[in-house]
Image (cartoon, rainbow, N blue to C red; front, top):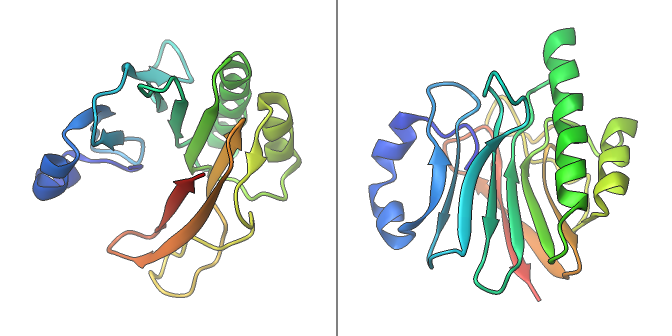
Amino acid sequence: LTEATPLWQANLGQLQRALPQGCAAWDDSPFGIAMLLKTAPRACEVLYTDGRYRLYPYIRVELQDHTVVYGIHPPPPLGTELASARDQALRTLAQRIAAETAPVIVLGDMNITPYSPIYQQFRLDAGLREVGFAAWPTWSPLHGLPLLPLDRVLLRSLTGTIRTAPYLGSDHRAILLDVE
């Protein structure tokens, strides 16, 4: 879950009972993030791409089968400072992901289109490939007509298929991944 606020946490009661494992950085900002799991992982940690300021969290989970899952949400490029922070976050994440030896799943709100050279370099440096059609629009400020393909799933050493869910109160459509 991206943009995971304490209000979301309070309203996710039934879902959290169904998915009692995981870790989160619930925050009253656009940068809260949570990963809820059915079964206990080998490891689940909240890390930060910006180190000392701890503004931009991401989640790294190692599942029981050693698959590593990253939940990411780099900052949106709203001005030069946030655009630079987003680009640096993607470089930091690419290095971390590239160092993984197990199969990897990366999912989240990338805050960048698949056509960006910065995003293409992130994928190349991390050794990831898109699942599904990268240009599926998943974000709309109007909760209706999808405009931008910001939410994506990337894999390394795995195969899978994705589908999107309808808007359910967020300005993003959920993406459902079936790993084969």
